[in-house]
Length: 380
Image 1 (tube, rainbow, N blue to C red):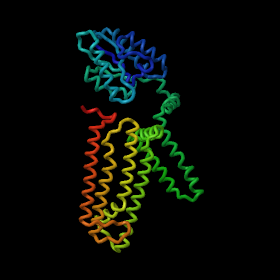
Image 2 (spheres, rainbow, N blue to C red):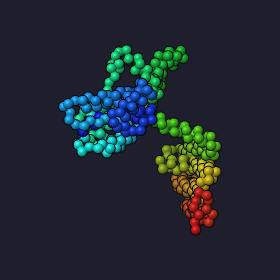
Image 3 (cartoon, helix red, strand yellow):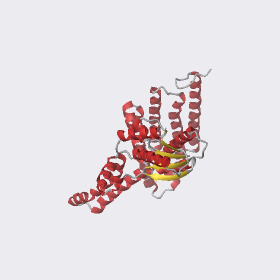
Image 4 (tube, rainbow, N blue to C red):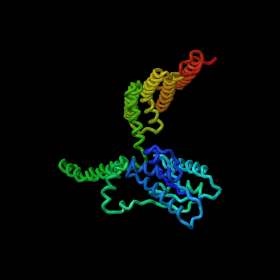
C-alpha cells in the first residue's frame, strides 16, 4: 500500500482552520486544503495538500501501480522542532493504526521546504519512504516576486529584529562618525562602541539571552506591582555592602601606611574582612528580614526562616574574631578601626558564634513543632 503523507510541521492547518488532525482520505484532505487556502491564501501548506491529492490521483489512475493508494495530512506543533517532530510521529502512528490493510505500507512524503524535511527520520522509523516531493510555487521563482518575498520575510517580528537591527546600526556608522568629529571625538572610539553593540547583540541572539532579559524585566515589574518589601531591603543591602567594601579598602590603606611595607596576602584578606564584615552582616540581616516579611505576607512563613539573620550574625562574629586575631598576630594593634583579638578573645568569639547558630536552630525547631504556621502541616 502506498501512503501519500502531506507534512505540515507548524500545524497551520489545525491553527487556521480548526481541522482535527490527522486528516485521512482524499475527500477529507481536499476539504482541509480548500479550508486552509480560504483561511490563508498565502500559506504554502495548502499547496502541499493539493500536491498530495494530485499525487494520490496520479498513482490511483496509473495502471502500473497495483497497490492501494491512500493520502493523509499530518501536523506538528508551532514552536520547538523537537515537539513538532514528536507530534507528527504520534499522528503517523494513528494513521497507520487506522489503515485496514494487510499489505506492507510505504510512504511518499510531500513537503514545502527543507525545514519540514527534518521530520523524515521520524517517518522513516515508522514506515519505509519511497519518495520525497518538495512543492515549489512557480511564481516564487520569478524575479518580480523578490520584493513580495522580502516584504513577507520582514513582516515577521523575529526575522525583522534579526536583520534590521544590525543593518540599522551599520547604517548609523557614518552619521555617528560625523557627529563625533564635530565634538573632536576620535573615530576609533565610535567604531569601537558600534562594534561592541553589534557584538553584544550577536551574543544575545546567539545564546538566546533575550528571553533571560525579558524574564528579569518581568520579574522586576512584578516585584514593583506586588509591593514586595525585598525590593527595598535588597537596595539597602546593596548600599551597605558597598559601604562595607569601601570600609575594608580604607582600613587596608590605613594599615599599609602604618606598617610602611607590603603586606602578605593572608593579612590583606584578614584586613579586608575585618573592615567590611560588620557592614556585610548588616546587609545580610536587612535582606533576610525583608524576605521573611514577604513570606509572612504571602502566608508562606515558616519559623525556620528566622534562622537566617541569626546565622548571618553568627558567621559575622566568627569572621570578625578570626580576622582580628590574625591582625593581632601580625603586630597591627594601634590602627583606628582594628579590634585586636587575643587567643582567648578569639575562642570566646568562636564559641558565641557557634552557640548563637545552634540555639537559634533549636529554638525555631521547637517553635515549628509547638506553634505550626499556615505553611506547615500540623503535627499530631
